[in-house]
Image 1 (tube, one colour):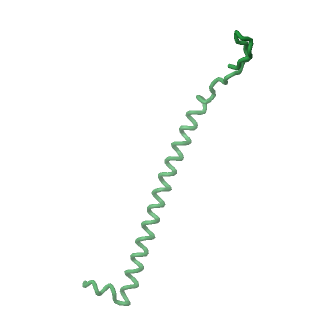
Image 2: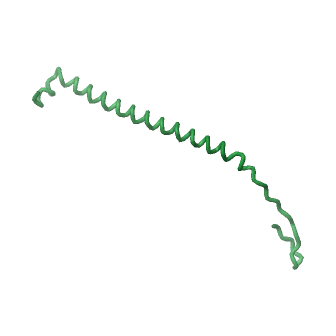
Image 3: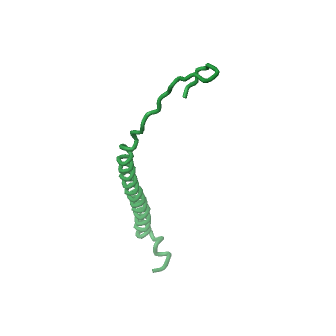
Length: 76
């Protein structure tokens, strides 16, 4: 086929439709892959949160007021 054949009125519409379909398919596949990767990352994040929950129960700090040698109240 010669390149001028794609410019004929009857064929040009099919070429334009094929190009548009290719672009839409590319966008669809790209978004589908991003969604799949986001789901995997979400699962990993949930697993890490579940693993960290028992360890997050660390002892709490307390504040005591004591007197320093100069008889000033100091918070520790």
